[in-house]
Image (cartoon, rainbow, N blue to C red; front, side):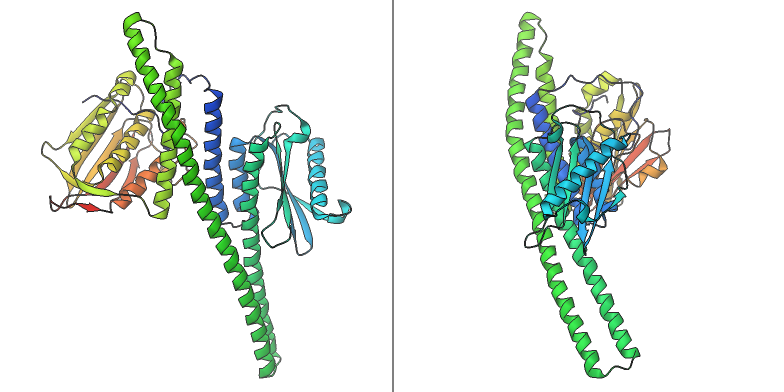
Length: 492
């Protein structure tokens, strides 16, 4: 059976791409580029909020968050100023190859801004200590624009508390209101994470102090009344700190809920214009095809590029919403009896065109009799399409992809095997991690495709894994329960 692949989607894989270079499409319309940037920033805010929800330290949590920011906002430098217990420190993240003279000007700008925010008489009175960030920002060429408009300084403060720091970002070009909104959202989440971390450390320190006081009192043979008083005072302090921690935790939960609400609302708002674009370009493409038959004139390629870009963004939104539902345990699965062989053949039928273009051989190996599985048909097709689509991206011309389905005791095992370059042993354990991509992957993607596939299969009560011998192709396998009773229909 010969078939082709689906349209390009955001499927991650650790396998290297084919040796041949594919031609890139010309740049999109500016309005579509702006829509793409808005979606990317929403995606980046989602990733950053996940880092800050489990905040460990500036080096372990803010450094990677800064790397995510730099993907959509070209940066020359970043400066974080913190004040705690009367001591202030300034952490600087310069970009690579940054000259010392320019870096000194950046630090002076940050010091002057913070002095103004806290009402200090001079920058010297701040007593700032300096330390470098853990990683360097990637080098960005100077893109021009007003020098003064390349800085954004956001104070770090939590409701009903005093200001305790500031975040300064220096762009490679002039920054506008959209950039300010983006950075402000990040700074607000950072302030909550830092304040929660401080409260937790204070809690630990005070409990340790209370234990030391109690031990010293016992060692000195302190009278029972004094020991009880110390314990009661320590208990009172602990309860107060526990209440403060609970309040900060509640704020963090509210921030998470607001993030999810923003994700749903923005995704909905993005889907509406994208649906209009897809419908309109589809109609234009049909008109163009009809005109070509009459006049032999080519269908405008720009219409096809706009349609592909809009469909790609729609898949990005769907993947992000699916993954959010999987994380919350709310993925909708409607199980009904389906024939495994029919699902395999339907998947391969959608890949006929690309198989012809790339001279790929696609083969289905299924039993001639029906093999009934209990599953959500659309979700299992989503998994198969993702795996076969990944395989077509890494398999060289003239290669082959084989999809099988066979019964194993009380389950059906599907397998998608290709003759591509394979997967390194050290990468196999990370394949189904969210947002993970191998350094050798040559095609674009968010790093969610395999994570979503894993969530779908787990929701069916099955397993998914990969096998590979580097240099000799790869095989992805997953299992789905067989139908014990043909009349069974379950929904979850």
